[in-house]
Image (cartoon, rainbow, N blue to C red; front, side, top):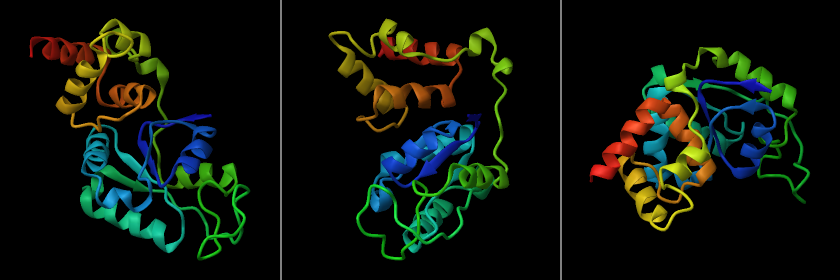
Length: 199
């Protein structure tokens, strides 16, 4: 598995599942064309783009390019890398009929082709040894200790945190941990929590 610094933007859940088997990275879904109206999702993508950079990996059909071009318009070029999968005719295993254009999407192409696409995009492979103690990874245990999960007022505190960071309020715990690790080191995260307590 490759550990990639940039966040990777894909279209749907099945793309995310496929990618999760190949890379250790933050993977964000656009939920198809929903990205055109989802301001909080686009804000999250912008934050990640500025912090770590992003890689756009959409399908090679018309819809994939529409989503790719929309992201391209919203985010400065210096923060965006583009990974392209080849146009391969076929149908994904979970489907009974092919898509409109009859092309395999990200979920359907071979893992080797995705690795090659990410490599060609110039993705940065992270070195775990570079993480300092104050920059150690934030974990679910930290979220529990800080009252963000598993406590009586966790929902209220999480809402304050997601509002403060302009994140979607429905973000899952795993996704929240992932995003926090991309945006902050441990010391910075603790400062954000301390500021929340003061509010």
